[in-house]
Length: 401
Image (tube, rainbow, N blue to C red):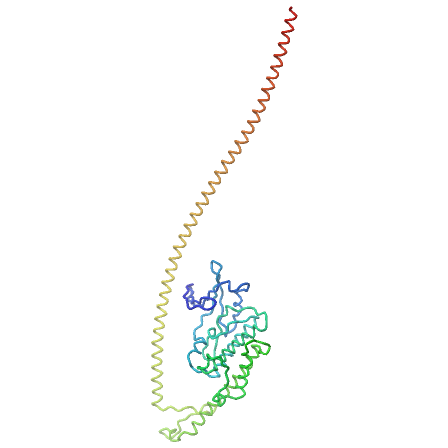
């Protein structure tokens, strides 16, 4: 697996990884184990069955046992932060739709007894009203209600930022519907949305804060009413345009009207030949542009594959060199160990011989002591015999006299 650094977050570095075997791409986050304390870093592996949550694949502990690598799904798209910083106004229906997706992700995480703890614009990938919650490596088991509420408060804060006009997003204001919003959408739906903002954006989470399931249900209801109003407005606009138009403009050369109707009786827009040709030319230009981009992308992919093959070859050469050096070191260590064992064996041999000689010396000393005792005893007996012989001589001398 080859790593390419992508960026760095508050908890650790983020990489793009490619499996050299099957060329699959992964997102990899490197985090110090000290950040987890007694918490199990593998908790995020439970979050595998929700399309609104970045899919986890596994984790790897480094050789030193100091850091852990989290393997996750590699997602493409724009973060919510980029969307907010673009300066574009986000439609209410889009903002509510994205928040619904975030709430679905939080509902799934909370159902596992865990909390995300870092729901922010950097950690949400959006495309239209679809959204995926990222950075699930920091999920933790919740031990009190306020931790669940903190997740929902952060999600509603994101909704508030999306609803605010671009020039008011950095001012910390709470969204209220504008006059244009009230003309376009049902007032009741807007008031319900405003009420959610006022309650959920309290500084300190409390029991007043709704559960993520209740918020999800309320937002889905609001979304249906907002979308229904948008569809009605579009239908009324199309009808008015058709009735106010000059009938002569709707006639073909044969004298029939050029407008057509769909299965629901809603008039479809009319395009004359020149306009259709312009659209076809624009589509052809767009197609040519896409073809060029595709060729460039294919070239980039080919270049990347060649680079990866070169990197793979270099890694193999490095591995061979390292492995050879490791084997040489192992051989040297073995020789040193054998030499040390031989030295210890010689020392044991000399020690045994010394102990044997010491025992022999002690035995000889004991024999010498016994010989000395015998010699003394013989001397004593000799002296006694000498004394006895002298006494007999003296008696013989006296007898002769």
